[in-house]
Length: 307
Image (tube, rainbow, N blue to C red; front, top):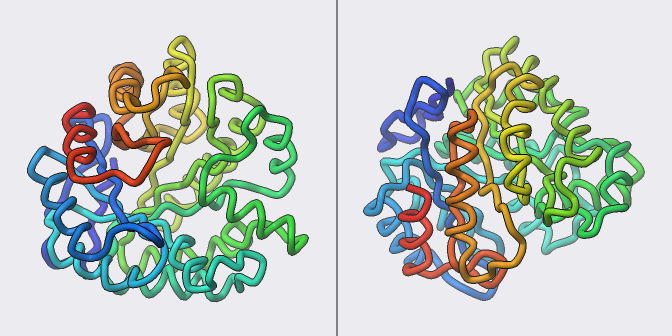
């Protein structure tokens, strides 16, 4: 069980995630460099909350990220999550190789101080496993995973989040930020599901869960992306075993690759089977998945389908 609730997020209401609780739903929000701003995201936030989202994430990239996040924190009683590497790379104008690990930790610290309740950190993607993913049909499809893989490849160094995990945990523990251990090697199509790359990362995430618990940091685990219907149960059970029962935050899972415009329905099908077999937390999908940035109508449809 985790209860993502940063004491600095004054308006937040505690929500539990785990097998003793009802299955929860997260709504992803956020602007792109060419679309949406603070006002639009606050409207989407209101729509997500109205239709039952238990959590929200701000995945904004581009300009004015801080202002958008602070506005959402001020307005949202639902716990709010982020992916700090998005802000980090946005502030570097997309220059991934130039990222200083200290700068990434500074962004994590600043967001924690602002009141972010949970953070996706792709710390389990190691350099030895990047090449495994390069043999796939679709390679690495996670944005955060792609950033970390590119940084490692261009700099010839190990994942800085993994290397400096003790420092990261100090920040998380100080502000009681829950870590959502990111699935940077999740599969992007059914052909790549349940492969060596995905499970190699999962093994590292299991190690990180144990380290978090020893330090008093709340941890949940993300996964697994596109998964054939008959592999969903196996993936849920494997995560429970490898990660010692840590709450599982599933992205979909998507059980077909051929439903653009209807991925919220595909994700609801996968999510129902996942929840039946141990998933605790569903990340919604919208009709815009794989196509565009979701608008208000997409957010509404996505939340309703997952609920």
